[in-house]
Image 1 (tube, rainbow, N blue to C red):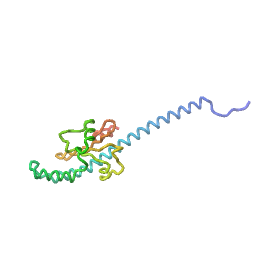
Image 2 (tube, rainbow, N blue to C red; image 1 turned 180 degrees about the vertical axis):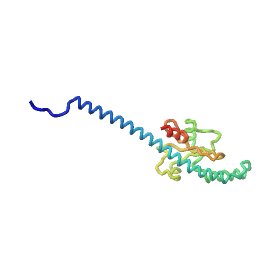
Image 3 (cartoon, rainbow, N blue to C red; image 1 turned 90 degrees about the vertical axis):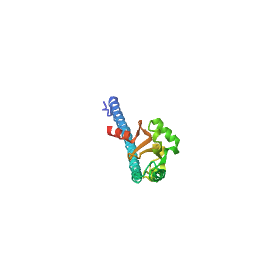
Image 4 (cartoon, helix red, strand yellow; image 1 turned 30 degrees about the vertical axis):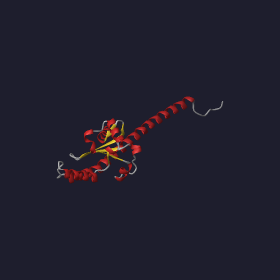
Length: 174
């Protein structure tokens, strides 16, 4: 009788099943890594925008500290200083972005003049060369001039989270 070499059908089936299990675990792990990388990328972009816009806001705060907001001539100076130092475009210039912010619940009508959005060119000017509004949506900054704070909002968001504060909380949880 000849000696038969080879593997049995059972051994082959078990090997294939084990390889499929390992492959599915690897794919799931890879998908999780990609999601985490996207979240970190969004967070990094928002932090860079916050840092750059806060510089301009601090300059406005410094230059307007001694001006009286009730005097017409000082109000004109304040508006001029804002136009010179605050980065982005007023949200009133683009009603569709304003509407997006309303839908996601990140808009206060009473502070409408303090919302500014960034187009791709604006992002490039502050050092975000590879960030586009087509891929990431619009980045919107809410300037709080009295408290010298900047809140960054992204219109696309990540899993229902749109503000930098919400994104930071997600990162801490992971």
